[in-house]
Length: 130
Image (cartoon, helix red, strand yellow):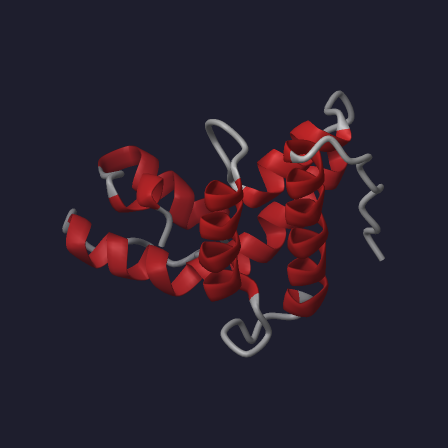
């Protein structure tokens, strides 16, 4: 679970659960139960989030790569490696059984390669969404 989601409670947590596709009524107001439900829904939500980055037209390739990788702050090799390990846990097909998890993971890997290229002054490669 992302650090932002872990610290979230109340209405933002319920909004996340709804946007992740949960349609049934939420029972009670127990944030611990909601957080556990959010953890269960996160694999599919992450796949959707990666593909949604494609439709944000006003981003440069570098900005899109940062958004896909959830990388906030300076682009350093350590930050990119940390982002890779976090995204691998969420999206690698061995860990995420959702449809299109493999494609989403390839997109994340290419985005992280772009971030490494940006940090070392290399040219960025366009992300293939296929």
